[in-house]
Image 1 (cartoon, rainbow, N blue to C red):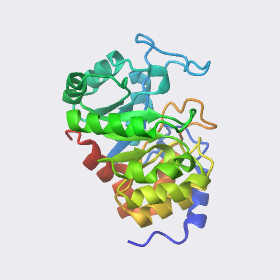
Image 2: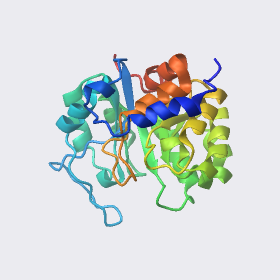
Image 3: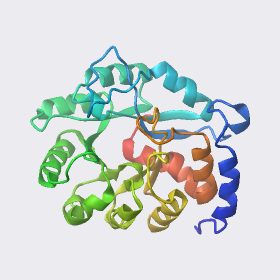
Length: 280
């Protein structure tokens, strides 16, 4: 399918929505099936670890649901952030509350037992996250080793939060993993060519964090979808910790306007459901 060539004009309409409330009826998308591939729940009843001096504010499940249910979000992936460390208690609790339409993306220690991976898989954890955006990319061999073991023990895929430009030298190794996902479009314009190389090797890309990236988001969406229409997966990135601007309902409108109905449906639902395997 050809991507809409008039995206610049169409984006003017999407930009006009930017000041509307997340729950405003006038801005609410009409499509009711959205899979949120990237969101965080910050529940202070469970361990929260400061990251580089930053402690995120509370963002409990009830607040997440208040903001997203009016948008048609009915399924998704709860992602462990750097501030969760390797704690699994919050994730076990929130997945039990949400039910089988929801899955988890977690972080674990390198020496995690295979039995723990299998136990987490049984409650809906589907992926292992590596947050290297604020660190050095010099442990790719360790990432590959742990990701390979996690896939064997629990069918988990690997999710990588990094400036994709820093992954340039590691594309060949990462491409050998059973499945990888790159967070937030790869973060930078310089990283987009690397993202496209990874897409060619089968990677999935999260269309998330539009307020935290430094790139031409519409152009990135177009190029990724043109390379592989099954690659993009939309997510809210709520509560958008440390982002220059938080998620806005206009981000959903942008995806629809840039990609058009067929490709947007894939990005908003089909692609993520196929990868994360919720019971929907």
